[in-house]
Amino acid sequence: MEDAANLKEKLIPSYGPNGKFLMPIKPPAKTSIPVSTRNELSSIRQSLKGYYHLTADIDLSGEEWEPIEGSGKKKFTGIFDGQGHVIHNMTVSGGKPAGLFMGLDKSARIRNVGIEGTKFFIVYNQSLDAGMVCASNTGTVSNCYTEGAISVSVGGCWSNFGGICGHNSGIISYCYNTGVILGTELYNIGGICGFNGGIGTLSYCYNEGNIVSGHERANVGGICGEIFTGTIKGGRATISNCYNIGNMLDLERKDAWWASGICGGLGSDGDIIDCYDLSDSMQTYYEKDKHPEVSDEEINKRFQLAHRND
Image (cartoon, rainbow, N blue to C red):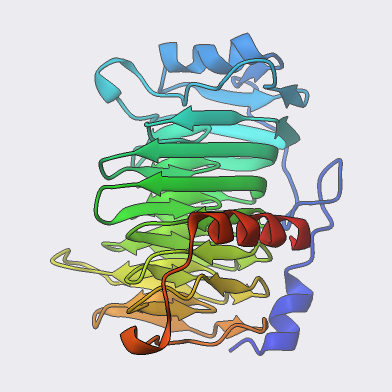
């Protein structure tokens, strides 16, 4: 069993070319395809089952990024190894799911990549998922980190937004987020993932980013917005050996639901094991007659404050 001090000491970024990764990085397989430019990165969507590795940092500024997926919304099934390099300045706006990758299949592996300077500004009237590494994951994401900002205003119920991944039912390990996330509607919002469901597992991850919620019934957590196994057999959704030091900034709207340093909404069939909230956040309920509505101007002001403090 990890205690808070030992866990925090273990998860200190010190690996990779920039010293920002949590685990050592092994060389890629000899058959791996090198990627060093935006065009080469984008072309992965033409062969979703390949083995790829970065040989240089890539700057995506200049035009918006289209998340990697195949025709007919096919998911990535291969391996993408960042080799300690960084994807810079990824921008997505409008009404669509967002991430470096759209969806990861069970066989997919994303590892050893940093994502910095991300800006997602999403406005839509239906549910969707967004995370800086991937919108949704049923594969494995490991030894990755994210820095940037996600701002969402989506009308659909139970959208999922997270620093690493929006909707997770796979494995996320040794990852961390320092980016700020703002959600103003009915969402699951978390520093690592918005929703951890099925037999999804989060382990040895941490969040430093501030998370701002503006809806009265949102699930907001430093690691995960909501955890819920549901009808899946063969395991349970789990969060283990994770910690949070980012603040949950509630916009004090009426009837606020769950906000917690680790996980906002905990289903009866999900497990949280050896996790620690080291922030100033407290699990809170708000009562309708005690908290007035907050204006859009106040939401924007608090979002900017959270971003400056991140």
